[in-house]
Image (cartoon, rainbow, N blue to C red; front, top):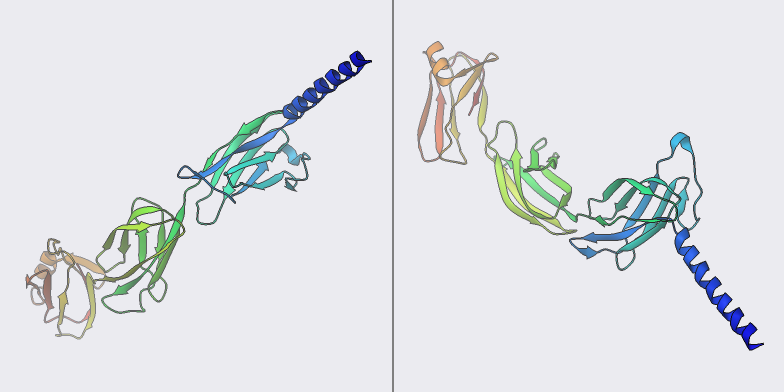
Length: 283
């Protein structure tokens, strides 16, 4: 009797081990760890989109099935995740607020195998500021603001305000550009994860002047430069034609343009005895 009981126990243990092994063999899907700068991240939403030929749909454990061919889960406190999936070709997407997110295409899931897909996210923040034109607030629509070396760019609104969102953390150099004004650069603006950095007010200085003049009249500007080493290389547009100063003064000897550069980094520009019309001085 004891031998029979002992044999039954042995058979039960073997069956149990075989059943557990079979469960492991039947596991099919993807798993991995989500991290930012080497630190595991909890609460990241992971979606697997199955690429199915001819619209074919495969069933999956209802625990992770969101829609036909679409599966979702969330990373745990240790950054790990697991998605039970049928064999197939998938695109894995990870998304979280204040990150760029990530997309991993071409993930092949094979039967009775778990494919490891670790994902690294990039933390982001927001940059915002205001552009003023020659000290005038509220008339700055259309100024370009860009982060050097990237594709991040914004356009100011009617109040001169700009916002650039989802910018990777770190130090960035910003350039502000507008036709008719000198470019301005803001160096090493540092952005932390999830932060909104107010870079303040930037005043652009006019680099061109325009005016409507009656016959025999004159125009005079005090032109300010943001860099004393910049050459003026002025041009003047008259009736749609653009001339450099030498050409203009040769063609219109009675209406010379005079530039007095003895004003430190600025220059007094005088256009006298003009023939009348719209003049546009490009600096």
